[in-house]
Length: 538
Image 1: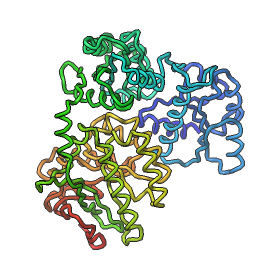
Image 2: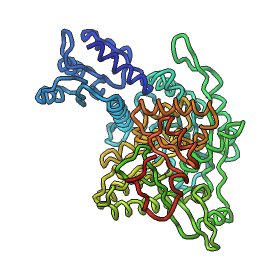
Image 3: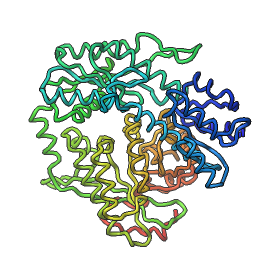
Image 4: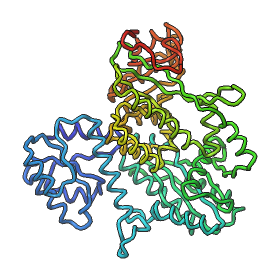
């Protein structure tokens, strides 16, 4: 069905993937050879050769045994679906299908296939040290070498290179073209960093390990990497080229890190600083003891948590609160999250802090499991915490041990974090899909890259940036809000308007189409979960 194929193509294009429609089964093998797809989306009923026979034919070709093949068909016969999977297909999707389901299924299969390709065992039965498609060392191999260098107390340096405007590039040129562009970028960076090891970390970032390099020369190496990346244009299409920009964060090895993850976290933070510098390069300064003590002193005190209701504008049957972090110091001073979180990050304590907050939230959900109306909690977490495998393992185990419905937990992720760590966030979301944990994107500001996240992440809610609370006083802001809400609703998401302090702001949000509001006009943050949601109609 060509109409259905074009519909699927438009959905995937909207998610930043390049999709090519090919309706001739006889020419499928030649098309695969020409385009080298990451995945084949196959219909069951094709003219001439049916989908199962074509799948079997593809599987017979050298190098195509692991190419993901996903069937999209309206055939309701369960026996036929079994036959499809038995023929060599990886998955079977039934029509009609929601766009978000199609995007998630395709993206998930592609990610898994790439991860598998990066760790294919060699003749010795150990993970491969290089990617067979790009020739670059694998991420696993470089991180393993970094751990070895740290254990041996080697001198040298480690570099984090981030390619700018990745989401915008992917949205403009499509998924496949973006991938080819990043492969070219990686090869150029590898040449610039030779003889040192360079691996691709995620969509738009690379890691370079320079063991035994002169630590006085690290800044020069970083500047050279950035300069070489942007020195010449990359050909992205036959008639079009693009210049890439990037930033580089680096750190010397000799002061020491606990392990590769600690080093990676340090240079990621340093890369954020590099974004703010005209040179686009920043070096990690190992914390002096006095500075670390200052940060730790700031964190000394009693952790307090407050709750602010999130109320449906048309009423609802669920009690929803955002959990807000406070820290009461010995002198009685109360620090807000905006002060505590940066101090925790600087002191390397953010994961501990996040886990304490999350554990408290799970305890509340357990306590109120039989409450009427049912309780949902929005809990903010740092991406530095979420990308740790140990945290994901702990959260899954905690939900299972308490037998909690995952949907009662909404993890709040800040937009700036999500833009930087899109791939680790996608991987974390995928792990949380089983128990049904939901996600909210906070501090949302419309932009090309931010808008793309609405379909790239399995979100349930979007919390608009605080400035939109004054949209009633600014026609331009009001129109910007309206368009952002329309786009989010089109993606099936619900909108939260925050910091609503007066009826005029609430009315503007209601007219704009938000689904929920929170702020002091509804109720200020407090220590109790006693808001009357049943009679709250705004």
